[in-house]
Amino acid sequence: MRNLSAHDLVRYGMHAVFSLLLVFNFACEDDDHDDHDHHEGHTDADGFVLEDESGTEVYREFEGAVDGSISLNVGDTLELSVHFLDHDGEEIEHEEEGDEDHEGGLSISENNESIAKVEAEDHEEDGADHDHDHDHEEHGMAIHVIGVSSGSTSFKLQLMHEGHADYTSTNNVPVVVN
Image (cartoon, rainbow, N blue to C red; front, side, top):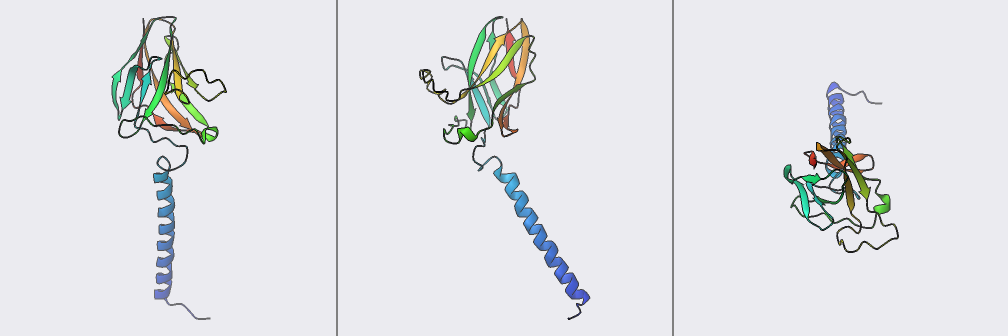
């Protein structure tokens, strides 16, 4: 067995440290960059649109800029479809395959339920196929806003996927109940 010189030990140690840094760097790079770009089922959204039942846009958030608000009367229920937007401001089409693998949906928070209740509803395929007059809602998502008492509130919208948010609204969505 050969005795290693101090020079050999330093050289082997440097190779080991460099190799570990390379492995660690590539492992972290994969985790950081692939989470929302390439993993199946994740949505890389830069905004969203809320549309009423007639398809009219009532609220839009894109890259932090907002336009519109929600207004309704006490006792009214407003159903709004939710469409997420890509980096070009275009609607992200949801693929039907893999939907059974999608554990999540919409999450609503930070609203005052004594003024308006905001509930998330997933439009999953349930065998009933009688809502085809809304061509975007076949396998989309929706929220229900219910006017409880006069006043103003707002809510945060999140698109959830397997226990974490793929998208969180930058601004709270304003709601006025008359």
